[in-house]
Image (cartoon, rainbow, N blue to C red; front, side, top):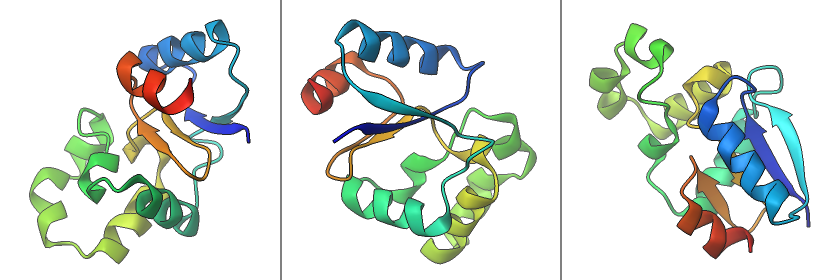
Length: 118
C-alpha cells in the first residue's frame, strides 16, 4: 500500500518528511494539499483511522487559522462543521498529513515516521 502524502511544496516540515521517506525508500503518492484538498469524507475517514482528537488536524500556526480566530471558535463547532472547514481550505490542515488507510501521521516527527512507515 502506498502512503498518501498530503503536503505543501513551500513547507519546510513537508520537505524534511519527504526527504526522510525518500531516504528510507518508502513509496508514497505526493498530493498538493491546497490544489487537492482532501474532501470532508476523506478527512472523516482519516480522522477516524487516526484515533487523534480532531483539533490536532488544524494547522494552528497558520495565518488562515489565526485570521479566522479558530482558537476560540473550534470548541463551539460540531465535528461535522470542523471537518467541513478543514475540507474547505488545505491551508487549515496540519501538514504533512500521511496515511496508508490503516495509520495516520500528522506533521513530521522522525520517531512517529519510524514507528508508522518503516
